[in-house]
Length: 121
Image (cartoon, rainbow, N blue to C red):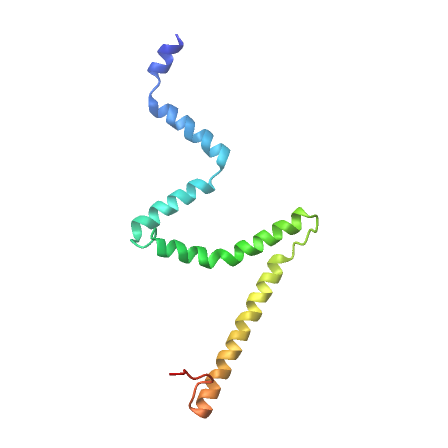
């Protein structure tokens, strides 16, 4: 009798049950990631290229370093949760510093007609 139920059950029902169990176990984020990869791959020819993936890795490495440092602080018992604040503050200070240096270089160029550093030929 069990064999008759399995034969009568369509395979789509079993797949549906399997997807529901997988969704409950993993959550929605992996499914959204797969959908995003499929959509962006269809929209752009450059999305899954080695150059683009390397660029994404290069841009996210500093967040990975900060996350690993935060993990070590939490694992050793030093619950320092101010990493996000320090990261935001250092980003703003760095941007202001770059802006000040760029403004200074442009004002020196206007005054002297030369860039602060010249190329050696």
